[in-house]
Amino acid sequence: MDRSILATIIVGALTLLFSYLIYRIQKIRRYPGRLSFTVNEFLRVMSNTPVNYDKLSLMYDNYQVKDNLIFIKFCIFNDQKYDCSCQDESTQITVKLPDGAKWIDVKESKGSDDVESKVRIIDEHIISVNFNLLRNGEFVCFEGLVESSNHFTKGSLQDSIIVKHRIPNVDKIKKVSVLSSDIRNKTKKMYKICVAYSIICFLLLLFLLLSAKNVNPLKYTEIDTGVNRFFFLDSNNELVYVTKTFPWTTYSKPVSKDSFIKSYTPCFIRDSKLYPDLFVIFMIAIGLVFILPVALIEGQSIHKTKKIEKMLGQ
Image (tube, rainbow, N blue to C red; front, side):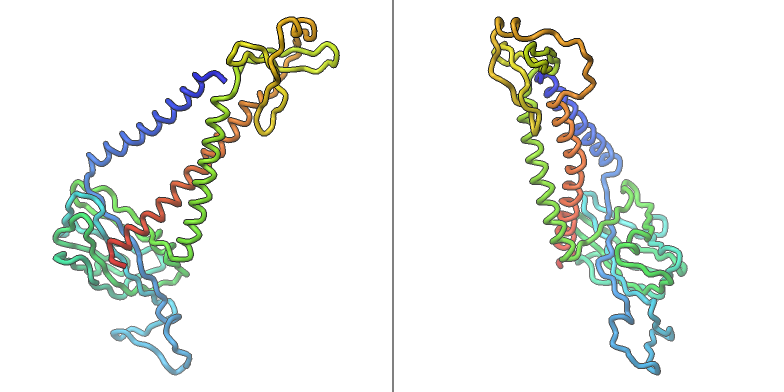
């Protein structure tokens, strides 16, 4: 294969990478601040309380605890160098529950030292959060009781919660998930498999691109056998033909000019099949396109979980 194609692929990949980096830089310049939201504790109160007597019930501030009562703990943290503050209603953060869920009570929990926060219920679906100053690596946490008519899980509830703010120069609040130990172990295995597969595919693709011959073959028919062959000029400018097409293309020993003239005749039959080298390269490239994003997503999930746990001191 002509090395100009390899150069085109590399330049194209670098162009996409630099375009993404420029987009991220421009976005950070426009919104230098970023806050993240996570539900790090989720507990169904009755399912974790040993109450097995029909005549025994639990009460909370004149509210009878039912099977649909959920305890959640959520945190808001600053993972950028830009300091954030929301001390009044004009810049407050609102946390809205999905339909089928309502707040029963909510209160402040332990957060970073020297960070003062407060929370109040606006209506049964929305609470507001305020804090004085949140520097890089600092966080605030809150605990709440939620009554739900739906069968929410920790993940589905976090995905359904709507978090908004009006803090100047701060991007939209990003929701992140903390992986459980079992899911994290499975994610690590998947990440390692995807990375190993990607490396093997990349090396194989590089080998094929560097070792492949000219992509414009000469098609000739062997006079004695009637077999059609694809001929190429190798790096030494000698004629060779394809002898094997799987898993990658291999070539014959050089054919002399006299032997080629005596033994082969031009073939004028149109062949619509994709040349084997290109087909294999195409399939490997498609594999990389699907596997690399999976590896990046799995790796990012593991990194985020470690970062959150380190920040929250878990």
